[in-house]
Amino acid sequence: MKHSFPTVWLCLCFAIGAPGQTPSAKPDAASITPSSNYRLSANDLVQIKVFQEEELDTTARISKDGTVQFPLVGSAKFGGKTVQEAAQALEATLRDYLVRPQVTLRVMEYSKRRFTVLGQVMKPGAYEMPDDLSLNLLEAIGLAGGYTRIANPSKVTLKRRVNGVETIFKLNAKSMATEGESRRFEILPGDTILIGESIL
Image 1 (tube, one colour):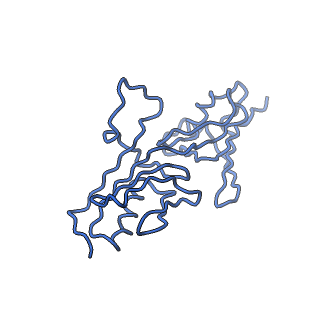
Image 2: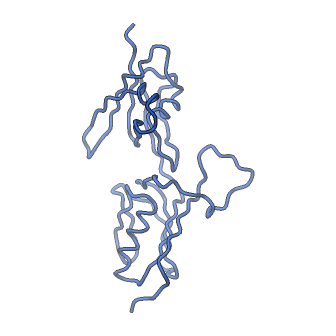
Image 3: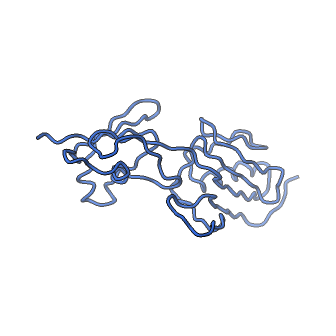
């Protein structure tokens, strides 16, 4: 017999504050607003609760294939979804077993997401991406210390694996810096950025 609950609601909260913050007191996790565009990835540790269904409470890491094993439903696909999308998808699946399930999904620990910047930057190397924030090309270059004296910002090559295939992007960071947010290029985990050299 299915349970009967009130109208559906979602509670979305993060356990970690924004990177770089040093508050005098640890904030209440419920007061932290999650980044709406952060997409869950393998090795993120998530906590899942279903209102008035304590036996379904689950804390697990997202597997390499983007799934989490959850009671009743088995494998639930979380990878690539935002926190809200993952909670809504799980609610939709749980409706086969419960009436109006209310899911709370919380990120307890973020996976390490790295990208690499090489070529004509002051501090070439591998860098970790901010936990719950997106990162664009210009910000990535800034994390690597900015350009060297002989860098050519209009000659940027980015390598990315798409569906297992290496894809090359030719980018112009100089024009992105002058044309605003609409032209900025988002960096993804695993990207390798190569800043070209000016021909002297």
